[in-house]
Image 1 (tube, one colour):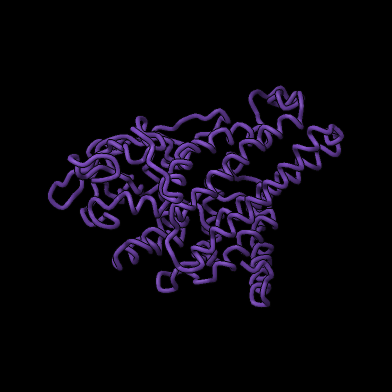
Image 2 (cartoon, rainbow, N blue to C red; image 1 turned 90 degrees about the vertical axis):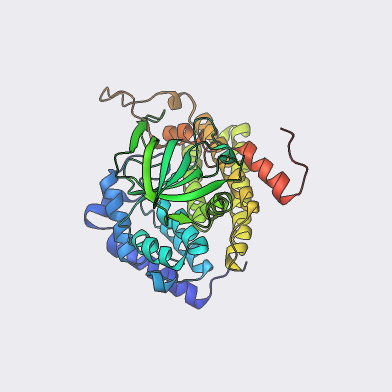
Length: 397
């Protein structure tokens, strides 16, 4: 990939910068540098309003077909948008599972009718989605899901439980991997269903995290229903579609995530220099190592994006990115605590006497502990790379 911007791409970057300056005003003016993964310091309603502001400007639909209401920019222009967004210290966005995961999946695997029904509301930020993958007894082992769906006339009837379901409490819809053929085992017999959340057969329970936030949830399905046509791909084809979704999860938007990581690193480096922590040769070496590793992460992700640039559906090799960034950020959270020293152990504001109030570094440290587990654990990513990319023998069961 050529990292030099063309004149058209420079113009696109200027357009993004100008739009952000013109719209980060009013209620959005104080959001700069706030929000993001594990940083629940912005009211949810305000984040939704900001996402709808982005949608009105055409920024949520980047890369989507124009016929579906999107803006068919190049992959490099998507990279420019996410990079410029973070450079402008625009607010950390609410995880829009619809635009980053479900939308691209429907475009790749859905029927024309499904594309017309589901994609336009997604890129208008008028319908919100959550992901029904993990289960209490399956975790990252998606092939071991036990949530079942059976036909009843023109409906699927779904029963089971999902867990760690991000933003299920605010979602209108959930894409659910369920077992539709109980005679099959593992990845066979699974289907990919689109299920409305506002119905009597669904209960959502929040999970309180160690950061004090509740963005994750348990979701219980007790004979919840969805129309037969709300299946992406064919019956029993759910594993392939679900794997495609995970590939899209690791696409162009991850570059914005990595820009956020760079901002966190720059802030830590500044603190280390001002506090004198950078004078410690061990900490100084660790900071240099963190910087070098982050640069490798960025270049590797750009290499992975060449698959999307060629118009293909991301494959199992995208697990490299997930394995790498999750491990880096978890280790970086630990480094933040070492650089901060004893002050990292104190939560709350001594001046006001407030209790368990975490600062951004403490939230990053605690939240990043989950990175190597959710979205497929490191162990699962290594198995995928070993078996499906390198062609190594399958692990004995």
